[in-house]
Amino acid sequence: MELIRNFSIIAHIDHGKSTLADRLLEYTHTIDKRQMREQVLDTMELERERGITIKAHPIRMEYKAWDEKVYTLNLIDTPGHVDFTYEVSRSLEATEGVVLLIDASQGVEAQTLAHTLLARSLNKTIIPVINKVDLPNVDIPLVKKQMEEILGLNPNKSVLASGKEGIGIEELLESVVDEISPPKGDPNKPLKALIFDSWFDVYRGVIIYVRVFDGQLKPGMEIKLMSNNRTYIVTEIGVLKLDLIPRDKLQAGEVGYVIAGIKNLVDVKIGDTITTVYFSAKEALPGYRELKPMVFCSFYPGVNASFPELQNAVEKLRLNDASWLYEPESSAALGFGYRCGFLGLLHMEIISERLYREYQLDLISTAPSVPYRITRKNGQVIIVDTPIQFPNVAEIALAEEPYIKATVLVPNDYVGGVLRLLQLKRGIQKSLNYLEGNRVIIIYELPLAEVLFDFYDKLKSASRGYASLDYELIDYRPLKLVKVDILLAGEIVDALSFLVPFERAYQRGKDLVVKLKEVIPRQQFAVAIQAAIGGKIIARETIPALKKDVTAKCYGGDITRKRKLWEKQKEGKARRKEFSKVNLPKEAFHAILKIE
Image 1 (spheres, rainbow, N blue to C red):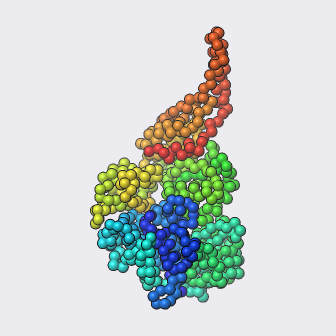
Image 2 (cartoon, one colour; image 1 turned 45 degrees about the horizontal axis):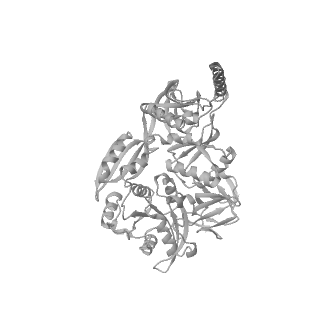
Image 3 (cartoon, rainbow, N blue to C red; image 1 turned 120 degrees about the vertical axis):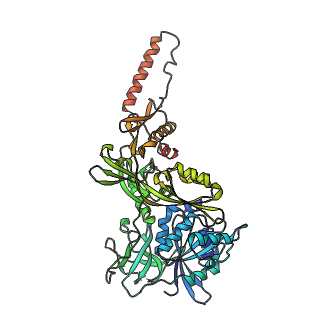
């Protein structure tokens, strides 16, 4: 155990985590040159396309240090985007220290600060690294000053590195060996292994990634999952490189994988503790903090999918990404589906895309919403995250919406535009501090609903891409909340309904019906699209009927002949309107995302 070091790489998005991890793998000869490619740990096609890390990736390296001892380094490369902070927190629980990366050209960003505070709250050793020092016109003294002023870290202990050019790699590895403490634990105590990730293999069942804190794991052992007392026989264990490498045992301090023929997907929970059936641990490990989704939307099977296929896909994907939640629900318009909770809008988009790519499901997704807290007049408090759950207005004593504390780091030149945007989004300014190097840190309290749709894009536009954002949920505050229903040909389409502050209801309803008129194809009869609050219509648009010239064959003659044809056509349209149903295209459900 004295020769083991477990650590994560954390940073703001695009600060070079995956590239630096590539150099570490090269330097330690963990990967052959023929296997090497850019961002080798980003194995998902979606990660490589977007150039971001979505999943934390563990890998084991062997490094011969200056003291001639060979150390085992277990590295976890983590995501940088605010929506994947839960992945970062899970990785930190399985390690003793972190390498904090700061881009020399951009300096300290919002997520850099958030990750530092998270690592510090968990008492992890922090090794600061200034990356991309090979770029021209970088101001290293300024970055060190920001590191000291904003993060409270000692700049003299920072490592200067370049993931692209391989500068400072050996110095970084030596810092990991010297500064991060070896894991604590006792191989002779009852087994305690923390499940920090998992995925499903069609042939071998659930493959579990574990960090062993006490005891030993060996093939043939009978293990127990402490959350549900399910027992299994271990068939294979090993360590994590690019592939799964089998071993005879895993003992205290090590990171590896376990295969035990687990086919029931719901048995495995991220954060659960594995122990042995005989000589069991008395108490489970603390696991992870309870997940609080911040954005909700519903998924329904599209044209090429059925509900059982969707059910199978979400169970398998939940195994690989524990940071989203789901529960069954039904809609009169769309049938059976799932109500899902996510950590942010990008997280929702990634999950939807993974369901499409990995399981070939073309889904219909409803508009995202946030959880509102409703107090009924009888004193009952409920959390409402879908318009279907919204009670009758007469029953509501108090409605409250979630607020976040948003931290924005922006260059001085763009402060005016950013402040205007934050005020427009019903923000409350808490602080504004000018830092060294023409940087400003702005802290605002904002309704979470205002951040949902276009806030991040507008923030980037207002700052020409230089602003960075981090946020955390703080509390709930009162508002006058209403439910806006969308009616098509007089029928409510519950999947298009949404919750909105009263003062914005008319404009949002008007914008949506105009948008729906553009995307819903014309029918054989006129279709009225209406937005309503309760029984009151607040906006309306009409899609005109497709017209056929039934009198084209009439040449001259009495006008009554034409009138008979027109009346017959009119009766046919009325009959069709009575019995026909308007088919909604997928674009209709995306229209709500495009409203200002």
